Image (cartoon, rainbow, N blue to C red; front, side, top):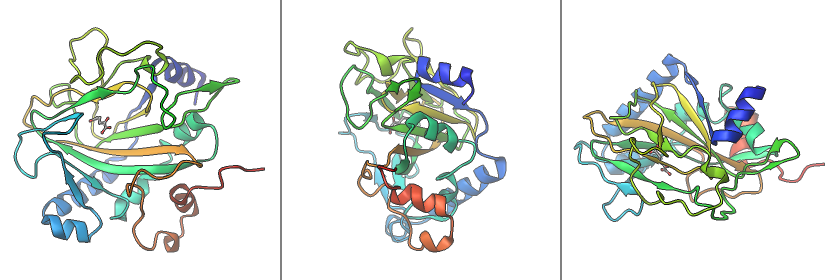
Length: 265
Ligand SMILES: O=C(O)CCC(=O)C(=O)O
């Protein structure tokens, strides 16, 4: 990270990496998702890409009404294929490693599809002590406990329900009045982060974040990859790899998925 990137990440709690995904990689990711979406639920599950549909009683999600498959998340690592290329992406991983500051691992990866009227309410950044997401700096080095990357697979304007954050909230010491609310892009505390397909937002999970309502007709496609210090466990089955990962011979990917030895030296 450059001195300016360090300063900005510390100040705001996130960095935008423009065009972190090459156009041909975006195409292959979207083609794979198209293929999976053409499968029924059972067939997708059999391929390792089980879909979890968002239900109206979800505490954080406002369910979209855009038709098609509706709003859902799905595992991507247990499918494998092109999604494995993002585990150790050279344009993004070095940022994560520096933000975590100790041996780290992937603890979750998922795909999210959100349709018209869908949104995600603000969470975190409310001065709570969350052992799984604390933002910290020690002796001039980041020691973040959870760093997430949101990869845009489609262009996402504010009207398409982009990610929204409250910059600086990862360091706040008072209750966050906006937690639990759908981000209002016009609110002075809220910063919507419109992206082009291929852009990545790297953020501390401690930052208050959510997504503004999708008021357009386009489906928003996003991949989330989440990293943590090596001593963390995985989020449920969200980082379970597809069979044969080790045999595919990329040691760094295997190490990030298995988790390196947490205490070295
Ligand atoms: O939709 C987004 O960009 C945010 C989603 C999110 O924060 C989450 O799924 O935890």
